Image 1 (cartoon, rainbow, N blue to C red):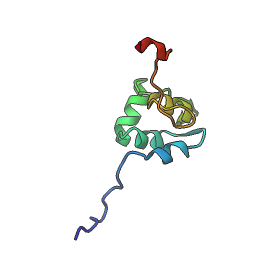
Image 2: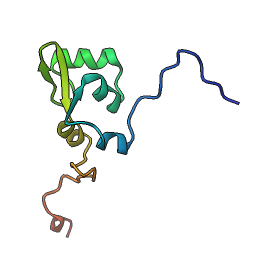
Image 3: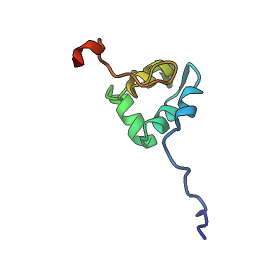
Length: 92
């Protein structure tokens, strides 16, 4: 039997449903979880301007939009994968 270790963090990352349930904008900690980044790494990247998605600086807060995160992950607003191609006729 596996027992949870006291003080162990919950698994990082988000399910597809959790991603689609995100509000329009959210704190950087939430984006870090969605991108499977550690807290320190995420904040260092944001401060350097090297975060994988656009980060909004509102006062002392860093925020990310759902649109930017889903786009980076290759999903549209409905949660469907985007293939990035402009035409399906190109495959012919």
